[in-house]
Length: 115
Image (cartoon, rainbow, N blue to C red; front, side, top):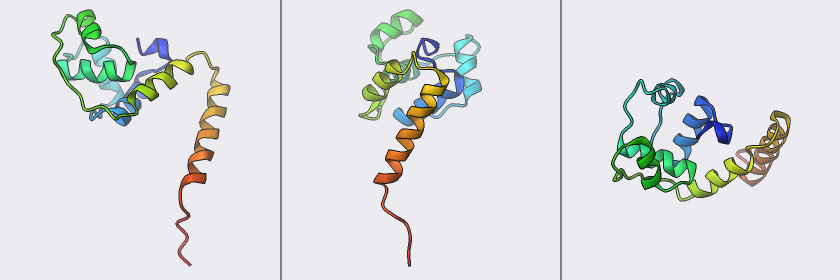
């Protein structure tokens, strides 16, 4: 499901760390994806928040009980929508969007110059 959104292991780990309380290594994401590491109900809820799908639906797909909770960042739904919207961009287009977002962020940050 993450690959459909153009998220590899690293991208999934980075997004998960930004919008949920979970910070996992990219290799751990890969192990979970290959079924080499057990998936907890809490992690199902975190993945659901990142994918913008109901946790119960994702739990049904994984065969786990729903009931895991996550304190996702309030922006998780917006981040999931952004990822979905960017899924068809080429690498060059995505780089342009990233550069523009960084430019906008730097304009918002107060200057740290101390004269």
